[in-house]
Length: 270
Image (cartoon, rainbow, N blue to C red; front, side, top):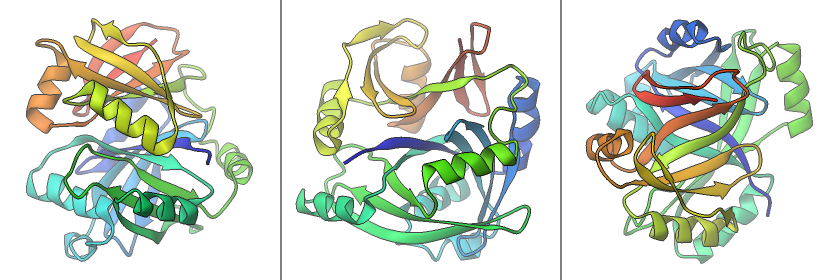
């Protein structure tokens, strides 16, 4: 079963307000559209088919009705109730979502979905997909959710190029090399993710910029960087304030070397 990184979901009260800060850093970001049946809307920045989605709540009363959609449940809890912005979860792409649902149920996980979703784009076109939300009953570790798009990767890439969503960054052709996730127990989390999804990992190393033990889990398109703090620093700060969560965007081919905090998350340009 093949898996590809799809996108990082970043909760933000007003997604349109993410546009200016990213443009000032040389990144191309656009208004995505509205999820009318979920009560949410977004802005998007693409790095090939990997992208970052800034997701906000447009209609709370609609959003509160979606207990099966765990992403909407999460954004209501974190953004509406706790006012907690920043990176929140990741989506992994598959072309076998029904088979994956059966496999994860057999592993003893609670599985929500597949659920159908759609977004009305700014030009009026409707984009459709299915999502799957696996969870451990005893909440061992946070897991990603999975997405299967109605259109193929090739079709989507061509459309995104035609819309100038891919390849339009002022600073060049940056690549979303990895997304960093801070976790309590590096070894345990890595073991669960690699066994459950058949992913490979790299050797452990110390990332001095975030002061953490880290290991890469290799994923097509964009890798996942799992980190556990070894002292005070960005990783420890996020873990203390937000718990286990994505927290870091690593971009390569930016023609610069810069680590900074922006929009309640960390960014590394290399």
